[in-house]
Length: 226
Image (cartoon, rainbow, N blue to C red; front, side):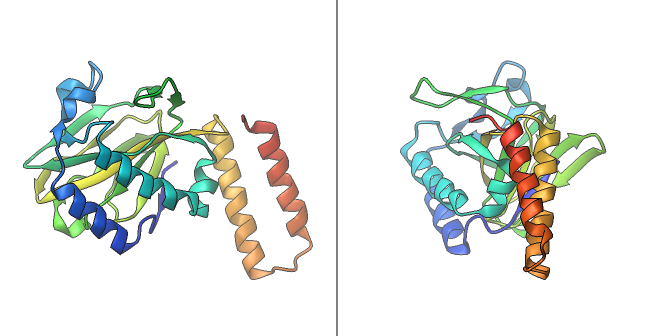
């Protein structure tokens, strides 16, 4: 299930991030890739311990804490600090799958990658190509969102980034360990929560709202890890 989350960052925050990244110390993205991904990964990336990555990552994490759609979709237990990449001049990332467990740089902590996230930082019209292409049960789905928008997709997905043939593609990417490990259960909870919110908006006094909220929280209680 792919879920788009618009306006995670404001235009002002996006502009501030891209201005700072323009002077960043980019490294070869293959340095952080596993042995299967190295041959197909051709991009630039900020080091995990780069102070700029930590600073901009904190901005993103603060924004996510206030985003109700992100919380409803991901039900986050742990969020890996965001990383940043850059594509230009035909750079591409071929078909690959993310590792199941990611270390938190500089710590002994690990995060299970239930969900992958890409936060787009450049306007889609400013570059050609660069689509995130995710393979799911319905085939390949191509994603290229507005600057400041985020897409969530299963960490189990085979995916790739199409070649950037004009301009520059900047993005943040990171992983989430959800309170609800099972993707089907997580999808049910998201759809139920979304329906409850629509009902609360359209008929706020409806008697069934309390019962439906009870169903949601009882399912979450049954399925969640803490």
